[in-house]
Image (cartoon, rainbow, N blue to C red):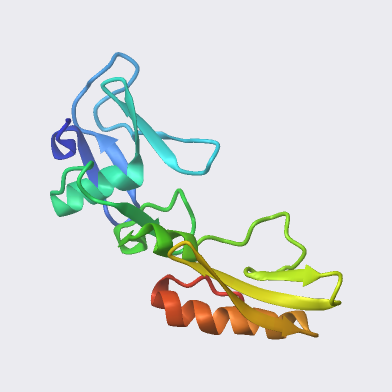
Length: 163
């Protein structure tokens, strides 16, 4: 397992990683490391293996082995923003709580769907693999507010803000 402090310099204000040593012919010492993958995260190949830059940054700042800590959340939900102030440890549940709404939903709000049969907006939330029905509403915004209140109760600062 590479010791990332020996390989990279991490600028915690910009979130950028820079090569400290030369590990292949294509890169140079002092050059910014990594590139943006299709999923929006910065990835870096080190000795033939791909790593997420935010996980490398966390390892450098905390002296933790990259395989020993759980998930790292981007607080502002911008996947390529690896500034130290934007990174925080998270459980899988907290990570999902901070995720944006899915693009192919009937509502513009996370946790809200349209029920054609009832002609109402339905608010739902999931926590620890359990679904919670938060009620049905005539107004989409009321359903979004119900979701928001429960999300803050369940997830605190990790809750995605609908409003």
